[in-house]
Length: 183
Image (cartoon, rainbow, N blue to C red; front, side, top):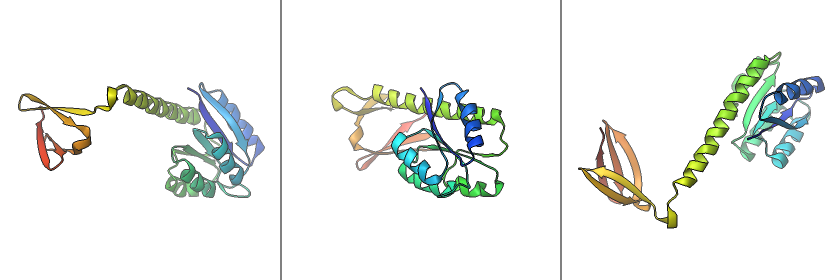
């Protein structure tokens, strides 16, 4: 698995620094570097990265405004702000930033952040694989519940909701409630 990264930074030296640091991390590839928010939005639409590293103050469109649009395009993108301004951190987390790094940043912090992202992406991929593996053959979907020492097979299309209260699990099926005792 390769984690695709776009860097949005108007300072070319900082672009190079970030790119160099990121490309030393296993399974990480910088697929684009841009210098303004408008170019960042275009890069996200065209290249569909997993992660963006974005500065706050950039020409054309600032990083916060650009990320608000990006969240509408693809809310699954991991947003990491890399900026010299601590005062924007609350605004950054309003767009669900994954991390907020203050310049000068520590290389170890970027590595740690990328390791967390890689782990989350692997778990998401594994969940999708497992979801496909348990998909029933022929479209038959049943939920098996152990009730009063008997097995009850419920059609998933009839299950409305599952809840848990006082160490008991309740399955709401059509118009009835089924109690599944927990151990």
